Image 1 (tube, rainbow, N blue to C red):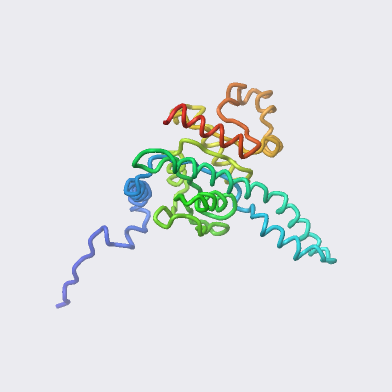
Image 2 (spheres, one colour):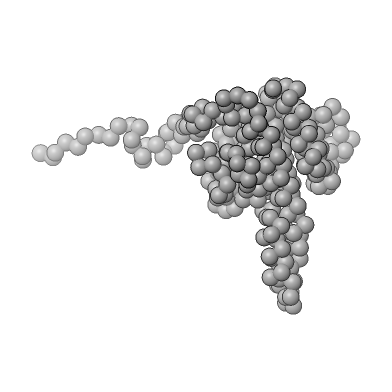
Length: 268
């Protein structure tokens, strides 16, 4: 007679938990586990930074320019042109660092027992790293909502380890971006940034988000080149009133003033 093996409890059955039958459990886990950690760390609300993961710091960009500028082959010339463009775009990295630093310093001076207006990003490289870095330089904490994808995404070194998360489901990650946010700052970016921007604008437009959340689109010239807002109005696919859902900002000072004044008016 075979010796009877004690069965594994369902919540310890890794094969089951990774199966399609347990998908709803995994989804719930991506809601309740972050919720528990945010409550433990007394995180009340956040300022979310969106933007390209491919934008690098000025220092890194200058290094690439110097490494490729003497190239004579077509391949090296192409790399040099790419490095020059990265150097041009690096201004957004530096602006994100400084804006995050100033907002963190401002929030740390507020009275109260909880953590107010904590910087939150996707936790990866580029603009995400820049915003986490700014909070770090100010001596503050910041959140990284990382996502498991095949490339570009890793947790940057400036995220507070206790506030570093790894998501499987994009929609659960997006929920946590919006749920605690009192402001969103959208720096130049690509598909992912546009996806996040458009989803948030849709939620606000349709009043699925009713809180007074400030949406800042950083650098009007870039975004008007990428998205023809005037054409959308002209074709009747959005209204002029929809342009009031967000503010364009073209400098650190302008973004800082609009966000902090908004917080003072509605949340302090």
